[in-house]
Length: 390
Image (cartoon, rainbow, N blue to C red):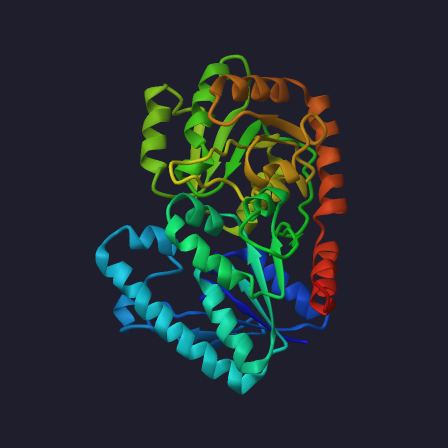
């Protein structure tokens, strides 16, 4: 089965940290005999290449110095930086469309699978027509929220395009609900899982509370620091914040203003091996996500799956696709978003009760094994690839 993944961005070199769980999905599909290639944009002149056995077709859309719309940050954030980037999107769409027509005519794919369909469903439809492939569209949440919150004028024409898909999937029940009234076909829920391998928990647990993620507003780290301030004198755990992003300076200042510099450590962007060690030795992970000013929130929460695959309990906000993963008081705690008092209470209870952490951690590991293991996810997707009905 010859399949083309249409993706906004893909790793440019070995070790490039871009959608690692999507790379993992491709590798698992290839292990099951699915011939997967990738269609994505160039970055500063990068041309078509092979990476870890995957053919990556990259389309050029401007002069090398201007090909920066994707990869280093989201295209939406880049466009906000100036009108020049908005103009660049027209070149992106034109040359992307031209390139996929040429590619589809020459390669004759069986399936074209579009991820983040706004606006890439355009590429998918053109490719489908050129090689009579079946079109799959997978939603991750951010694209549909962008349309419903910020670009309502585009919603109706987008609905007309997306309903040309043969199959539509979403990564969570929350995202599937967001598609109600937009798509006419059934929405199949196909989540993803952790990209990293199972870590081995150390016998000596460090007294560390872990956050992992990009430091942007919707991650809610501000509320985590405020909550930690409320309980830091009554617990012996320190807080470790892994990741970088535009909010880092403000968050470091907040920790300093609250006199937490010696209890809150900003680890920055780290290697996969170092991250694995943090997961293995921490007491639990916190993901205090919120709905930000753009209406965006967590589509699923891959860091939860990564921690849980290491047998760690989690505390997370009751928003977005997080509720597909975390069951309150079963494999972790769910708390209301943007409420430091409630988050502080959950942190205190988890930090003080080692027996509870162990029980919730075992349940967390069971959740990953039963609902979010790659064999199940890949099997469900392959069955959907073969299903010609609906």
